Image (cartoon, rainbow over all chains, first blue to last red; front, side):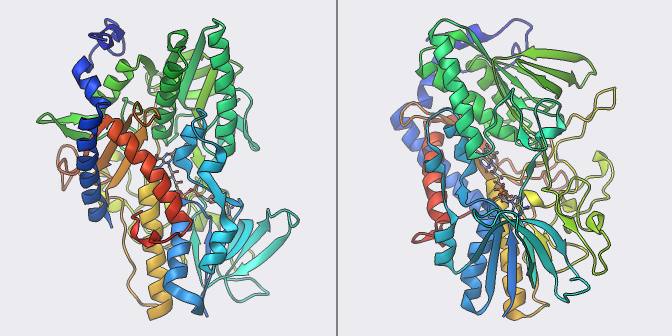
Length: 54
Length: 489
Ligand SMILES: Cc1cc2nc3c(=O)[nH]c(=O)nc-3n(C[C@H](O)[C@H](O)[C@H](O)COP(=O)(O)OP(=O)(O)OC[C@H]3O[C@@H](n4cnc5c(N)ncnc54)[C@H](O)[C@@H]3O)c2cc1C
């Protein structure tokens, strides 16, 4: 999967100027340990916004 | 004994009615008028639309829940409001038409002391030629806006998968079906869930996926986009959205007003005035929303619909409807109490209230065609507003007519949104986002219009877990099971 995402970029097409995630960033998306940590952090961040909004 | 009548038992009306019933107790009456026998957790329709959930998992019967809550439930649709009563009746009333099996078409006048209009949107498929008509969805595209639509969408989707398995290439076109649509988030979720399912079915390489929407930039979502803190930068949602579309190999057309749908083809006009056509084998296009078409009559029978409702059919509330052009828009234009300016015992919440103007900057093509997202009112604001309105009315019933009204301006509240990008306990992903405030306040937060300390987003499996947990939590809450009041909107 190394640089698979980069291959989706079309020169001077719609997506030529965007950023694309590398293999490490993509792996982290579904890495269970990392995502468990993110789960806790995102929940805290969301609860803060929910509290501010009620 | 006072009577509160709530029109619409969706996200906003159900929240308002259930809290009002709890706060008022049996000394007063809460009536819910809503045409469906089942409550639907609409966000999970996306998963029904790709075969990952059944209709039964996203709906439940309303009658036992309302019986438990002591709510008088009328399975009917409201047709008109007489806020001053009529020649024959002194009290204000709503005319309803039953949809309940066995009583279909029968009408009744339901008197009220207070009224909440939470009728949500009319799915206005008829606004685009070929997308549908007055009866609803047309034959060329699918929809995920209702649970039944989503079941049908999945049936068509599965047929495409079978074709791809037999070696037939398929083109998927997902997005918005008109220049004035909202709810881009739902289409966003659907296209990435489709992509995820195609991968799972092993046919991704046989599919071309394309997004078409009325947003002037990808990631606008009808809220003018948002800036999120990431890696020390304040990064526009445009960058993140384009990145995700590129990563998942989904091409896009933006700034598009779809003006015609035919079998296997849409025609559209772009913001630069050019016209185009796009072919498809499978297409899900969100329709534009309008008010559900309630009428209003004065005591003498005069039609006062234009006094009570905005031209788009949504109910007028305490918003500034004469704010003028974009340059003059302010956060304070947005309603706070959702009270109708003419009739103080009438309120509107959720999608049913008329917003003062869009949130995204309005744009039109050189031909004069408006192509601009209309403002979304997602689940969290709809719930919070419903609860605030219920609170105001309960205070007035219990403490007297002068009790102060509760406020819930979208310019002062944030929203947490989790947009699914594929379902799976270990391989699912979702974009978890918070936005604060929903309506940007460029005076308070110059530049981005939002507080970037409370506006963030990231995509990953954690987001999917949250989305799945929220599915169960919100259905639990809507069923009024133990501790339901502790679950925030
Ligand atoms: C596919 C899809 C996915 C979505 N995903 C998300 C998401 O992930 N997160 C999120 O926050 N939001 C999401 N939304 C938006 C969310 O569903 C809405 O914000 C929310 O449903 C609005 O609540 P409401 O009560 O105003 O309208 P609704 O929930 O639509 O309720 C309106 C109710 O009024 C009833 N009604 C209609 N006409 C009448 C009448 N004449 N008389 C009486 N009752 C009537 C309807 O039957 C319905 O029960 C999604 C929307 C869609 C379509």
